[in-house]
Length: 177
Image (tube, rainbow, N blue to C red; front, side):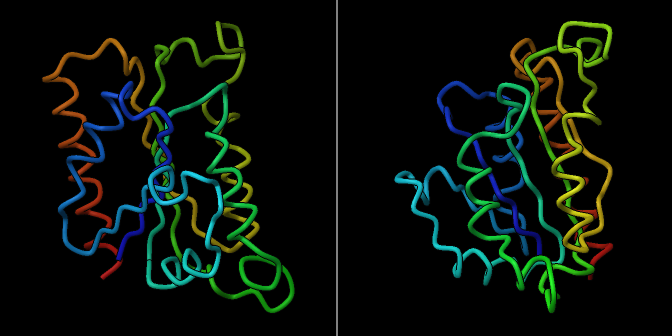
């Protein structure tokens, strides 16, 4: 089972995340948890979220890079769901051995995400808080998927990106069965 934590605050403006999520929504053993739909008031049901994660072998966090980090609701989601004694700390075993995949869209070109260029940060640096969280909680960190230049891509390029994402998820399902 794969649990996708989907955090896209401005859905009407995101062709890229829509193309990716549309490609995988109907796959068997994949649950898309759209937290901006489920928690528009930011009142996260931590117990329900924890129960979803317990069923998953792989957790995917999919979102646009938003001001060089994740959207606000996803940050709150981590604070409420990844609690001491459950996700980390003494006696915490709930997430150990599960896998975490970061899937991000970036409006900028890949070359912009170099220390000497526009963003002054690499994607590895932007991913480091999530990677550290994964390691802290005993999750296996998987190689991230990043869709660069997301606003400039043609419809065919978006469709191809969605198909590649779908294939990656199918491979992940095979790996974890």
